[in-house]
Image (cartoon, rainbow, N blue to C red):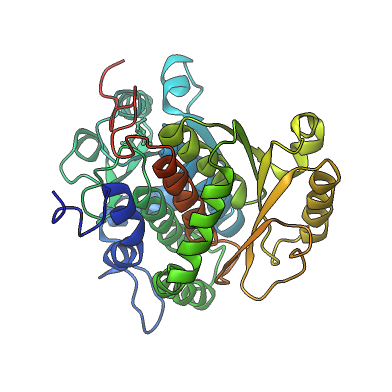
Amino acid sequence: QTIEKGGYRHFMLKEIMEQPRVLRDCMRGRLDPLSGKVTLGGLMPALDRLAKARRIIICGCGTSWHAALVGEYLIETLAKIPVEVEYASEFRYRNPVLFKDDVVIVISQSGETADTLEAVRVAKKHGCLCVGIVNIVGSSIARETDAGIYLHIGPEIGVASTKAFTGQVMALSMFTLVLAVQTGALLQDEANRLGLELAEIPDKIARMLNEDTLNKIQNMASTYRYAHNFLYLGRGTNFPVALEGALKLKEISYIHAEGYAAAEMKHGPIALIDEMMPVVILAPKSDVIYEKVKSGVQEVVARKGSVVIITDEGNHDLDDLAEFVIETPITSEYFSAMITGIPLQLLAYYIADYRGCEIDTPRNLAKSVTVE
Ligand code: G6P
């Protein structure tokens, strides 16, 4: 068992720590590290129809739905195709209005989630092209979709998904670059430049996962282990990261947590903030409204909330306001979710460990929900 866990105490920690390696596996043979050009064999048969899509609808459940939200941002900004994101369970039961030139993308780690599989069938009944982003080779969703991208991240054992989220965002990023060139929204050169940025992400993550960062997050976890509530805030691609950070904490530590779009804080959650409420704020400096996010930090501090900041390496702007600052390697704002999500996975992990929780098999949860 310890061997299977690669020397770690839990599969979850092993899977968090192996993210640099599995992202390299995900890119291997697809992203040319010299030119930055992405080629996705599994998409070839569908590329023409994809580029002509009137609209893309992305469906998934749980963590996969959070990755879909990152995908929405990427595809709309870079490939300029309108995107909607839906919970697979809602999509399948509400008689969606679908046109033949809509494309449905389904995201599923296991490829077996019942609601997501049914979303594939609904899409195909309407004559839509259906693309799968799946980890498990030969799974039901992989078999029933018209084209797709496998994550190639190896099996994920921990019930709380970690490397699958990062792999899904990587697959969506490569997908977007291919699509954006095909639609003409990006020149091949521009896409390649972003491809080279993607190629650097595994090394950046490996650099972040050093002893210092781990100790700091462990320290944070020890400070906050008795909290009853947590708030996570972020915007742009970091909004889904905030949702995912909150989900991780709920799943394995049983602490109530909410993720919110940063600017929505003043429309409700701010009422909850007091000295008992840790607030984790994703505040990369590349954020176009960084100054506004910063004033949000001040509002939390003014209400005695304890602030954790996730920000760019070398940014010490917020050191005086925050209880803890985690510095993350800088990448393009499009891709930062793959980096900023990881300290939140670790925070949830260490808090759950301090609380003595069954980290790899949390109560009431299943790795994949194959029945309704
Ligand atoms: C379950 C798991 C989650 C996962 C979700 C979707 O709820 O506990 O970790 O995100 O199912 O699973 P899928 O395999 O479709 O990505």
